[in-house]
Length: 265
Image (tube, rainbow, N blue to C red; front, side):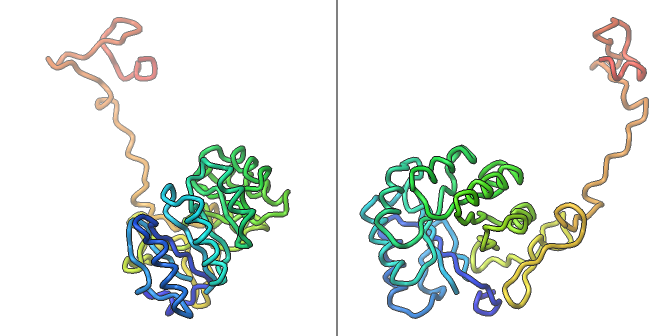
């Protein structure tokens, strides 16, 4: 569905930046008072629309001059932040960009190293907002550790991606503002659940909010028939045979294998 019909509270614009695409998107945005689907030319990444806006540029394809140009145009548009305009391995490039823009730089998003990498980014002034997420830093525990690291420096820590784990992290920390929902494609219906769930993890209300569920754990509504433990094999099924039909031998005793040996072999 179109976002303006769903009441999302913010927008994430994710575009490929090759062949001038990111420049074209920003020029289109500058010519309009609000974002519309027709403004976006697709490459590999989708656009997830929400009123406040952020720009996620395809990484590894924009140099310092292009990133600075994009950042200044986004400042004019009132964007909240920009993420991954350059290769994140170049920490000095992000330090330079953050120092030359009033627009907040969020990161690192996909850089390996969990909280160690993020600590270096903060120490070197390479970002104004930190990024975490269960898919990027190794699970809920490491994601919380990154969020608390950012909090100790007075920084927001925005959670990357969707799902029950990321939703739980958003709710558990005081310095996360947004929850990313969808991130597929405007013409892909995000709301139908996958086969193993009765409902999606992050149903959204009419005002654009996603609420945690009261069920235990992460609150997922899993279809139990798809997760039943297989029936215990009977003793006869556990007797292994050689291709000729004779029982195979227990490697420990040298005797023909029997069900009683199944924990020894």
